[in-house]
Image 1 (cartoon, rainbow, N blue to C red):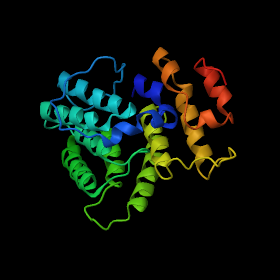
Image 2 (image 1 turned 135 degrees about the vertical axis):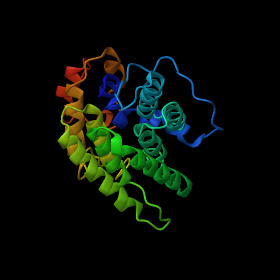
Image 3 (image 1 turned 90 degrees about the vertical axis):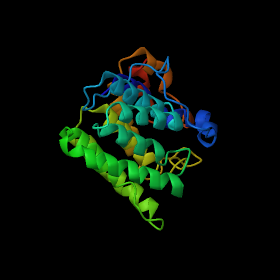
Image 4 (image 1 turned 45 degrees about the vertical axis):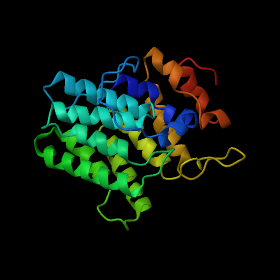
Length: 246
């Protein structure tokens, strides 16, 4: 999986403040179209429909670009184009869930739960890696308004860690694993004097491993600024790899 994901892995750490304002500005859904300028994200899924693949890739690119509402539209369009494909529903569930800028609300939690259940129902004939992605995400949601969401988030993060370990060459899995860890304590990853909170150095290590796989020019312009702007700890090696000053 995928070049644009490789190029934007660190943007989970670095660009979120610039886009947080958009997370709350939901508008009525418009028909999804293929948008220009989103890079070359490609995560192959079990579909024979090229347009479904394109919309899935676009949905993933939009998640990495923090446009979760539009990502939902793209994933839903992929599901419409290939009703038998499981991963578009995984994408819908992922995009509806919590992120570093926006916690989940009951309505989105229920919609995400329904979406991942749809993915599970379609996953029997999906490739093993897709089934693993779906199983991991299914731990994030519950059909229970009183569910302990923090516990579910921790279980999801643990599952993503196992997924990333199982597929060590999958940089999307690593990126999403790092994001899942960040979501456990959003914006509380460093102390005021620049010391890492528990778990932060693991996030950095995972993202440095993703950074080591970055090869595109787009990466050089999108991977540098949230945690790392407040400190220089361990960043010089990764920044040097992508041609940025430490």
